[in-house]
Image (cartoon, rainbow, N blue to C red; front, side, top):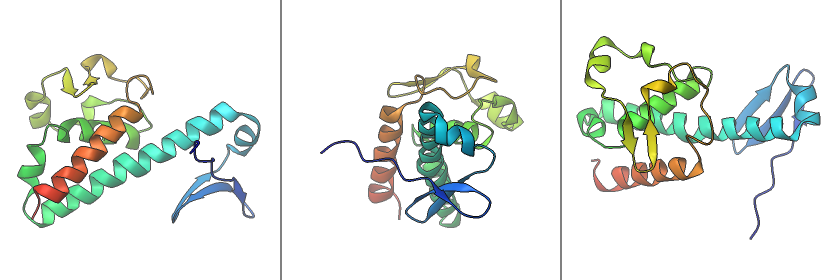
Length: 155
């Protein structure tokens, strides 16, 4: 089995977009780059997958734990803080910004933050999220731990 093929670029009257299941990622002013620059397309798809895998997972599990009064259990997981920081980076222009943390969080967080092979340093501040620092191995590890947590620990 080879690599899955990249989704096709689709067009409507105004935009170019890709569809992945029910998720639509629109590329507004970037159509020329997407059609002519394969590296730009690959980076755009990587960012799309990160948003879907990291951000959506974080939002779903956070909301569930909040509503079922299991948020403290969630926060006690080793992967919670790295997941939250990566999610914040992704949702804020793919740049690390620890200044957005609450005062309480800033006091509690001790850098570097490590989780398996991932290490988040205070030096990342204002730097772009780079694939050499956060790659598919990290994403997969977080995914496995989230699934294990949901299946084995949550009510």
